[in-house]
Image: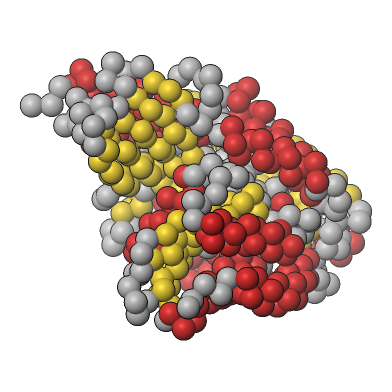
Length: 299
Length: 203
Ligand code: SF4
């Protein structure tokens, strides 16, 4: 038997969390964009950066989603094995999406494949998409919500290279993707890259890379160097805000890896647009919480 | 670069004066229409339920809120990726008489041709700035094809000084984003080998 009171309580908290995430940028993204706006002083760039800043201010003031595309709701949950409400969690997350759809309000974005019908409530087959991880010896959960918009999901791809194509093959794919689809993905983007032995692992890691803060680096020094080189190079492309050209293109590049098979070198790419609505909250068993990505905010 | 304040219906003469890189602020009729609307009008050949002559089509799927039985409010409406409509825009322009296309990112050679033939422009509204855009909408005059769902339906907006709309394709064959892409690709061909040098991790 699932405890409906707990489901209610948990889904209320998570729905407030989703609503807040839809109208505000996380601290790291906000700070990075302000820094970039100072550098982008020519052409259309200042106009676009000003529209972005005005937009975030209005979204906060009016309590509205900052972008109309509130995406497919994805959760990435790191669940402590001693968290007492594991049984209630899946239903609570789905309820939270239904509530947030009404409250925020979120755009209706779940289209059932084959039937081609929009469910009208953001819940559909395997949606909200939930990624579970177990964390031993903890009694709390760390929950990320990510709003996967259409424009910024379009550059997403995964490909299995042959090892002789090397890491330079990965560089080529990234640059090709950024000069084509990336232009339309509301740059400056945060680029997530996954490197692994098969397509689905690389793809998933590329999305998990986007959960990492802007400006953070991979622990492996070679990977960190590649992140920096890619960031520098992509900025030199000068996509500018909105792809209208400028001095910069990306907020950063985050790479995550898994050991590969000797015969494969798979790469996955995910992009997060400037409106990178990725939020993280830690919830304790007594429902007190720490809003990790928006310090000091109470829901 | 010129700045234009236009009111619908926009005429061929208005459009002829406009060049890529100009900025438009538009007052009047703006109707949303994206993938499914283009599919119905162009692929299925259905009659467009809104008279779009001289008006603007907005590649956008808004968040709408019903405030009474027949009245809606626009909560947020930013542009969506225009490139998705590339396949059908030329025919859509010819079929509807739309003069201004609003979206984000560029469109391709077929739309550039369409803008030339039908005397129209494609413009870019800053992506992700959906509340700024919603605040330029004074009234929601109605909705058509709501059976397509909230993002895909045709929402009829009355807008005031809607912009900045950066002209990316004009009716003279100019394409701003294509020009930019040429530059991006030139830079890319120089950068990729440089970075490749540095990531020789295979033993
Ligand atoms: S790419 Fe991002 S900011 Fe742009 S429309 Fe999509 S969700 Fe909004």
